[in-house]
Image 1 (cartoon, protein in one colour):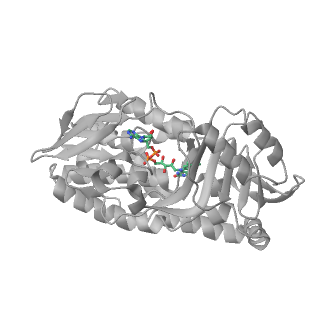
Image 2 (cartoon, rainbow, N blue to C red):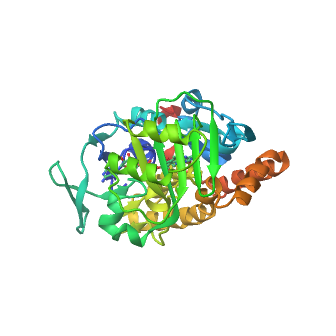
Length: 389
Ligand SMILES: Cc1cc2nc3c(=O)[nH]c(=O)nc-3n(C[C@H](O)[C@H](O)[C@H](O)COP(=O)(O)OP(=O)(O)OC[C@H]3O[C@@H](n4cnc5c(N)ncnc54)[C@H](O)[C@@H]3O)c2cc1C
């Protein structure tokens, strides 16, 4: 096979999933991750329907993912006095299997760290395509040349910026922000809304989770203190436990604030550089991010194997398959659903959770979306000697 030395940027879900397949195909894989070590914290992610589960099974990690699953916690929607208004069933937010993103990343890292090279605490600074490869420079490490480069570095992808241009051309802001924090409160899963704002505690996604409507905010994504101030401003005057949460936020060690955005790209590849996962088709909180990432990794590796490493053919097929799939699953918009804009819309959203028939229809629809890709059986990706390890 041609093109067997591959650099992947990003060691979360998409990157290590691809490393697993490429390692099995005998490629020489390097994964570069900006964080100084594997990022273990974070929200729960979920997989829905037969397609996602089949890919996890082919990867040989399904049983382990099941063992580590957090599993469908119901969450109460409450009023300002904490009285229950509705219950969001665990199956709605947690799909078929729910696992912490950090646990999933750790599992994939564990399965790939012997077959590929991981470089933490570094980042690509330039990509120059030559006739036979891509010359890559790094913030810290020495320059190197690879046959192919994969950007699996999330919705604010560095590789996308370097190869395709600024993120303003590809990342569409939806008018909402979300924030995650650990405020040291042990609270049963509950969610409270006022128009355009949501605060949740103890829920399936994070210990404290906020979604709010807003115009664009100008801030540094790596400045936690600035993010705290923005969040406190956005939640001023809100009822329920919010004043206490904001008081605790001042001392919180970790807070993460980001926009709810959708990535829209006509092409995922440019020459020898290709994008995977949220970098190519991210839809914040859309509910399909991890599923898309693992299906995308499977398709990309499979098409490379089928094309005998010919990246032009393989990338075109990957793009065609994933474009269709990502367009179907990219329709959902989390912001207005989690933080409806008016009292009426909040009541209507809560009402939906009380109608089991309506909920079943919605769950069936998400399952259908998650299955809306034809999963080829790529023989080259089969585990060597039948072992899935
Ligand atoms: C609150 C929240 C809830 C979510 N809930 C769900 C859910 O219920 N279901 C679901 O399927 N998905 C969910 N997601 C989305 C899911 O986490 C992602 O879609 C999924 O992990 C795929 O991500 P990825 O690997 O493509 O990118 P990411 O997980 O964003 O990882 C990108 C990696 O690249 C690294 N990186 C960034 N910049 C650089 C650089 N310059 N150089 C090298 N490395 C870099 C980052 O440190 C990170 O490790 C949720 C996300 C959030 C934030």
